[in-house]
Each structure stands twice: as C-alpha cells, then as structure tokens.
Length: 216
Image 1 (spheres, rainbow, N blue to C red):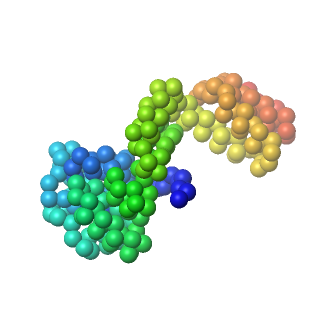
Image 2 (cartoon, rainbow, N blue to C red):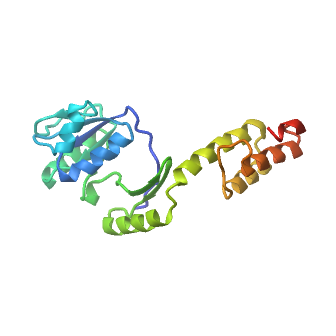
Image 3 (cartoon, rainbow, N blue to C red):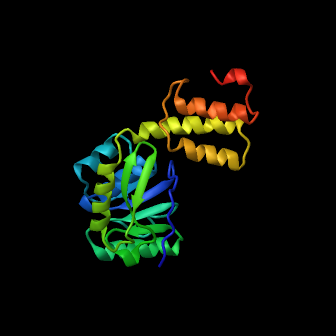
C-alpha cells in the first residue's frame, strides 16, 4: 500500500495516547512538540510523562483504557505493552473514523511516526512504512550528520527574503526562477546581504521597484 506523505498541523487538536511507558514516551513528546492537546490514559507513567502532566502540558487519566475514551479525538496512538489492548484501541478508532497508530504493529496503523531530522522549521521525515524502523533511524543519523547546524537560521532568513520578493514580484516564471536561485545562495539578515541586493536588483530591472530602492 502506497503511503501519502504529509506534514500535519496539530496545534490545539485533541490527541489521545493510550499508554505512558517506554513505548509511548517518544510519541507523546512528538505530539507535545507539535503543540497538540494531549490526553494520556494509563494506570502508570514514566517520570517525564508525570512531569508533563504536573506542569499542565498534557492531561493524564490515571487508569486503564476503556471503550469510549477516544470520543472527540482527532488522532490516536495506542502504545501499551499489550497487543490486544492496542488492537482494541485501533478497532474503536477505526469505527469512529479516527486515525490511529498501534505502535510497532504495522497492520494496525493508519499512519506511522517517521524518523525526523530537524533544523528549526526544516524537517526531513523518513519512513519505511513500518518495514524497518532501524533503517529509518540509520538514515536519519546519516542525514543529520551531513546537514549544517545553522540550516534552521538560514531557512528563517530565506523565508523572510522570500516574503520580500513575493511582496513586489507578480506571480510568474521570473519570480519562480528567482526564488529557486536565491535558495542556492547565502542569505543573511542584513540589508546589504548579497542575496537581498540581488533580489532588489532583479525587481528594479523588471520594473517592480524604483531604482532608488535598490540600495535600501
């Protein structure tokens, strides 16, 4: 089955995690990083999960899962150490048209957690469709080692420059080509940044800016 790659906005979305042990911890952390509204249901929890609950970062219902716990959920993770429980969670989620991941049980997953390389707003996600998480992790380490640590900061400046360009340049092939060219150049936050000067010169040459604004 072919997977559809997607980056999903989860901010304030209700997400339920069944389980709060070693299997669940990293999944909970990923959801919190995405600013989801997380509810964890488990009789016991690791210290970090307890700390997140104590600080109000998530809601912890300290009990076993029971049918009906997924009502209103946008996304579900079944992450207990008992396959039968995870599959029961998946069955309830499926009946309610709620996307569910039963951790380490690919046939009972609507989606997978990829291995992710992060640099600020840049995310590179790797999935093997559950075939080999170990391979995904190895590839993540290799990409992480090759990607400069300041890529996130560079991306932020590139984003600012893109907005500067799109504010004055009309949609078209010229703008598309310029943006692709700028994505290959060094971008900094200063007004005299060579890439910014190049963008202003391009805009002036095409009549989008008066000549006096090139040096600004």
